[in-house]
Image 1 (cartoon, rainbow, N blue to C red):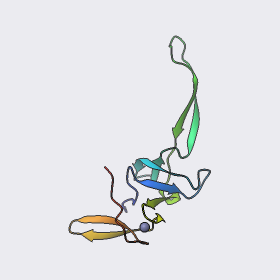
Image 2: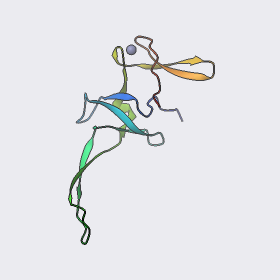
Image 3: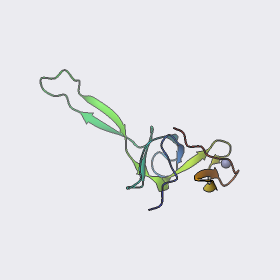
Image 4: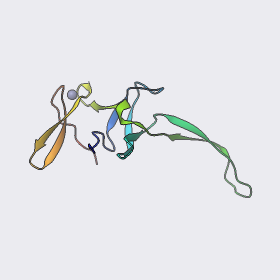
Length: 108
Ligand SMILES: [Zn+2]
């Protein structure tokens, strides 16, 4: 299985769907499903009902839903939408922007 180009804490731009054009930080990656969870993207409102006998308030909670990695693109810090390529240096495979050649570091 090919490894995903998108890592956690990457900044990505959404290409499709209702949140098209939005950028956000990757919160989680699901490599087996090929989906990512992006902050503030595809937020669904969930109704939270108050439970009897509990002091929790019912209301509406907002939560992100995963979207397909094919619908997002990595954002290059210098030129915008990155076309991601790889460059191998020793044992490490660096992600680079194919447009400007800048390395796209993996944030921890
Ligand atoms: Zn670039």
